[in-house]
Image (cartoon, rainbow, N blue to C red):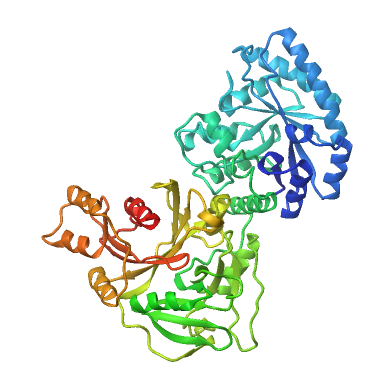
Length: 594
């Protein structure tokens, strides 16, 4: 289907927004009136620029406070509308959005609203323009799509139809039943469809709309379900994004536009409109790769954790450290560009790396150049929104080349307690968080958990996990602010162990230290939970954190000190615990600050 984006979604000047939409691959745009008014270009120049970029102007918006007003006010509204229709003719736009009135002069009179909208449509028709009437969720008298349609139906004018907006509909809907009325609207009377998602929030709907909308798939609305209803009604116009979002307005327009198009591609797939290559959900984490200019500190820490340096890449300065099925690569090849240890790449175990790469390409994920020697195992890799390299790997599968074949082995895997990588926690740049959630959800096929907000000593820490039933767990974190010097907050790798007490005792016996946990924390644990005799004393002695869910599942974990911008975690899950110890995050954050 044709794909469009409102210029209000993007940052920059109108020219910059049009360029970003074109480069991302959109077919058309909605031109937001404020963007046009602020542009030094004449409407004819904007039309020419848009055409040169291969874009159509699918909608001009919005016209406000038109209908159900006293006659003298409506006469002024028609005069205003005539000027706007003249402008639209110069612009080459043939559909205008009219929002339900919020004016204090508007009266609750559907017959008057229908009569005045019909007269507006008479005028629009003289200019070859259609009027798409939309119910604002906060409209003074008309605030539901069903009410807007009844007025349009009563007006019975060929140049008057309705605009359906997923935010205005879903922010008021109490359930799927509220969408069934869309089937009563003839498809040819749905003149336009605007799409936005939003996190589920308990707040004033106007503020919710103006600041927190996001692209489909980034929030909590069933946008795909709404789209199915609209298409079943016979709508065949553009799928158009209209998102008001404070972060989007400040972020790079090109990246935002690309993220928006990705959201529409995934939405079409979810709604059954257009198939994509099927997701190959990763079955685990093959390795975490650290880049460093000084491998000694991280090597000492890995040794204390029970890892052994088992192999060396046959053509690159990369060492493989292993313990059970948990693997960490230490790459010193970027030493000239980095000073601190960072978590730079993730290898995801997949049954079909080529199929994973095809889906990533279909969803506009940037493929990374393949720099390898002739004898190297071919690896498909893409860049995540935060710059992390994601590699699709097969490990010791007889039908596929194994990435481990690129390494020359010198030692056995470490004798420690870690079995696998339990999860990876990736701190995101502030303007890429929603983009990253959508990327991992659509490209990798992971299911998002609810967003969690945590108290940081210097602000609010936002976190959202994504996982599959038996595959990798990723936690995306949004720190309140960058550290001094603009550096990204630390990321971490969590290793699963069968006996965390034994693992910590061996770690401490190796001379390494864990993050120090205040005594007050353990006093609170004693008040919240009952423990076996001596159990809490052990946790207090060793610095182990504890959580228990409502089903009785238990989570024991602890953190190492940070090396560069990386630290490690031991975790032990019992009883089906599936979380990440969110209640303990403020304790960890405060300890790291100290």
